Image (tube, rainbow, N blue to C red; front, side, top):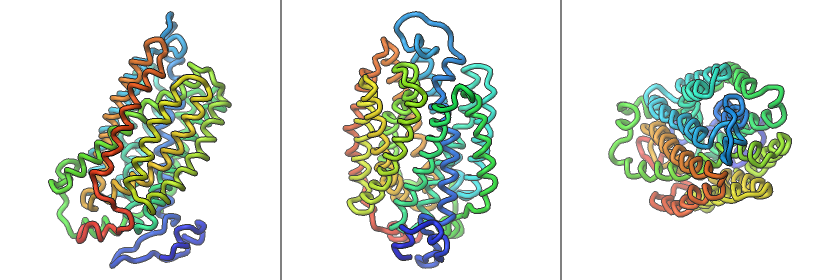
Length: 438
């Protein structure tokens, strides 16, 4: 396939025939099969991020009157309660580990449709929660399938494309997730008084209908079809990740853990910090999100170019370090710091996603790739829970968000060197990396 297919318009990409690597038919990053994966990721982002953008309303709706200098005075619930509630929701995503692992047995397409539909349906049900802990419990049930949806969308994008399109395709999936997340934030900022958190969660019915309508465009990758036909499938999860791959799995999981230590609390507390602590208006937070969308798109463009030209490892390391530094800036105090840090985090996250996503998928063969994606999510869940509990507990004492950020985010900067414990994979096809089991 010519380079034009990777950079042209959607209509041009759709008309081009699939390229072949041996017996495989591979897609350009703007072809319908890959765009559909991006739509599934968008639906996952919409369903998962509503709890973040609406956290302030949730706390006010279910909180009680408090006296003193803690977060509870401003938010309705204490930082510890919010941190524990968010940690439970995050921890529930561990359930995505077996769900993603099942995709190595039953196929990416089957599991994507099942996980996305079930997760969105449970998110709709969460709109009727009668109390905070009911809300946490119901939303937590929907979190594992939605997390698995996002992970499997990236696996599908990696397997459907050749090396020159892979970072672009994974960037597209990351952009889809970001757009879905951003829509909930913008809706909350502009229409929270009319919709409330219940209305925003009920709107998850819209992407649910959309994914049901487009499920016919979701394809099973030729790489998985060939691998499943020629190899005996092991048990999902740990059994599928055989001994030769476990050292790499430990490194990849450690990276997921440490980046989530930063992104977990940084993303989860940002709206309650902006609206309930700094008292930034809904319009102000919406503008912040829209600006971050544009900056994040620029980061994705830069990240996919850097991943293909200077390498997955160094691009991922720069992005990860940038995320941690941006989180430090965002919670350092004044309004301008929050806006600056939030935009810088979007730029860094955009750089990180294509490189880290491509690397994580290229380091493992098709027979275990979905199971590894499940472990990646699980490690991120544990990292986010650690970050949420540490950050929330420190910030709860006199609203010391800056101190919480210093304790939680700064150590992450020093873990970026883990990228260089695994080999560079840029410019190589999966068939070169894994002969006989791409």
